[in-house]
Length: 269
Length: 161
Ligand SMILES: [Cu+2]
Image 1 (cartoon, rainbow over the protein chains, first blue to last red):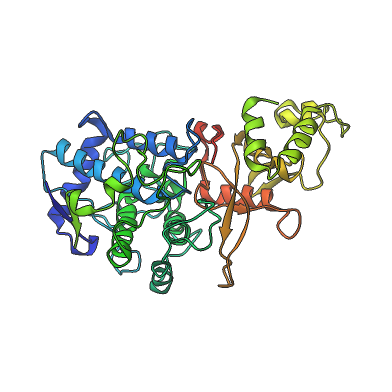
Image 2: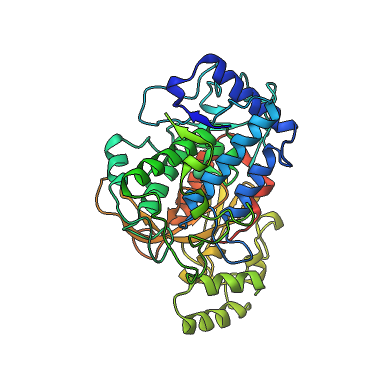
């Protein structure tokens, strides 16, 4: 069902509780043939170039549509597993005063292992394929980076070209690359711990962070054009073009297919 | 040279001619270098066993009470195969060409950076000049991210970008 994705600042206690409980439930139960750890597997697999020599999820044009589809699927699975069609992925506006790291939401420990409270092992949250040897979620807020400022965000949003050759992390004049490095990477590093790693979806804040990235892209699309993905044709080697399917999402799940969120059962408030 | 390493060379070298030359060089495993056979076995890396040439930037130090060791392979084209150990575990490294944004707000520039499972979104710059100590800075950054924890098994798994 169509949901409105709200800011964490606008969520009620009941909405927060429903969201975190659905995540916990999805750690041990499957929905639609997937479970929570499936998402961590996909993130690890598609961070790298796969055997088709394509970079699907990161450091490439499809970074934004890939994560849009990834979030859409998780939202659907959380609704299914909880039996609550109103569950939505909230977004975390990093420039705002409201933190997701609170006792009643994602847990309040931000300088080491989340050893008690929400998302601690005792609460029912364990690490999967961790490159840090621990079963406890790690966070080191602010140790390695600071949050992006409104000025930085506005500057990124002002880039008019979606992406261009060589379609990788070295493109200077590219909205996608600026958003990916200056905002997306930076917040992964700001949270630190598991969010800094390849298996970042171990931290539930991953979804709130990527929801904000997706929202910024949608705001950008609303002013620059919904159908602005590059590259357009299928001749570009090693990257997903507008009409190429993104793995692992299956046939037809192309950047073009996810370009308009009004067809994806969610909107932003 | 394994297939995987050969693919890396192909991917990261700019010109085919350079690739061929590098591949030949990397295939020459018995280059002269310091004999490290007297080192305790747990301190020796695969490279020591092959007696590769010593790189003055190689290091073995304690940082915040944690042992970090770094070995530089055969120059800039094979940086993705440089080795970093934290404690007794090896961290798989990948190099990417990426934009760097200086902290002082000056213009971004393109350079090579190491990423790994641990610093996946935070490349550490490496070159032969101003940033030639990149591997050591990476080692220290990894210790900072790990805190009290050790590297996990997943951290040694390689991947390609
Ligand atoms: Cu991310």
